[in-house]
Amino acid sequence: MEDIKSIRLDVKRSKFQAMSDGRCPQCREGKMFKYPFWRVDKFSEMNENCPVCGLKFEVEPGFWYGAMFVSYANTVALLVVLGVVVFYFFNDPPVMYYIVPITILSLIIVPFNFRISRVIFLYMFGFIKYKPLK
Ligand SMILES: [Zn+2]
Image (cartoon, rainbow, N blue to C red; front, side, top):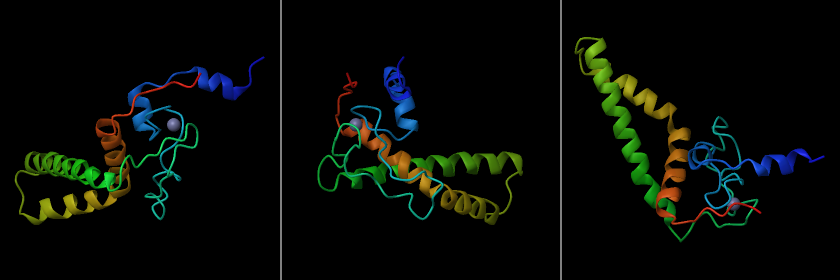
């Protein structure tokens, strides 16, 4: 009879599952972040190395600066979508009706945006190959 851990390792995660779960791009098992994103006091704390395969997440010094561009793109996309929604659903209200919800929402999503930007940047520009365990 197999124990739960070996059964779990048999199930291969898709790249999308691994990314949305913030897992290591090399083994798709180890978590990149130490705490879940709703821990707003510690959302940015990362594991330096993968706890399962030992991959160093910061591929080179200053690597995470690149994730800021992904974060910027996410924020602009949110701004455009929300701007279009406000324009059509509230029949082009005064400017404050755009600024307030966009500012509030972009602040609320900071922990999520921070993480997903690093994950996307690592998967896109880390050039790390997926090596399944065993
Ligand atoms: Zn790993």
